[in-house]
Image 1 (cartoon, helix red, strand yellow):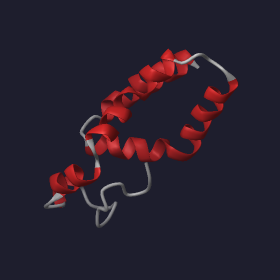
Image 2 (spheres, rainbow, N blue to C red):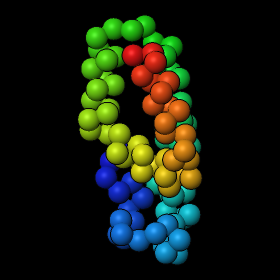
Image 3 (tube, helix red, strand yellow):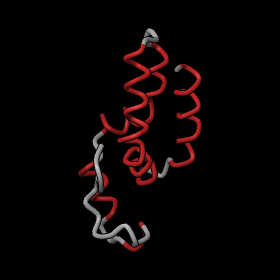
Image 4 (cartoon, rainbow, N blue to C red):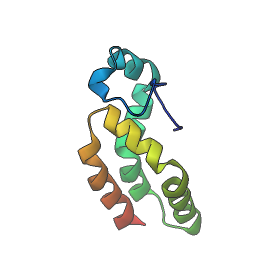
Length: 92
């Protein structure tokens, strides 16, 4: 996860204004990344709770969460973010 995952020309444009956005999404968001974005909290819940897990979750929230939200938005799944975060906070 990183800034501008799909190399879009501007963050000020609506998705509908980018003619080849689907192609950019398909090229830059792999099936593995899509799976990870949807199920990371589920897998987090299957881990044995320890300090390292809490530190990793904190790092994710502080450094990567905005990029995760961007990917979810591009996939049309922004509404799932609150549920996924809820799962993560329940298990942490």
